[in-house]
Amino acid sequence: MVASLLADTATAAAGSSAAAGAPGLPPLTLGTVLAVMATALLVFVSVGVIYLSTVEWRDRRRRGNPAARS
Image (cartoon, rainbow, N blue to C red; front, side):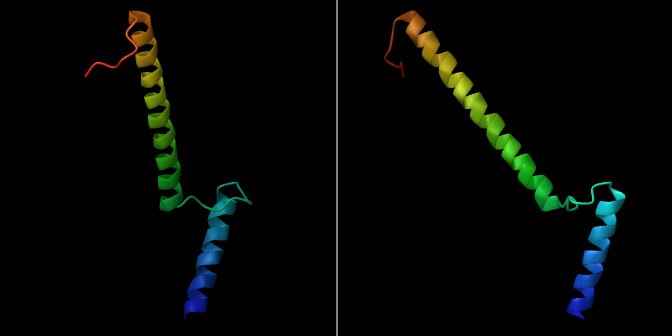
């Protein structure tokens, strides 16, 4: 029974990738989409933190006050 389910899944996956026009690529799954979105969000937030840190550093340097004010 498990073997027939695996064979049906493989056949369905092969049919869906051929129908999508990408014979060598696996079909998109929810896990793949979520992983790509999580990676993109991580990169976006990291770039934002680096940008804001750089802007704050330049502003402190411009004011001539290297110590951070609390």
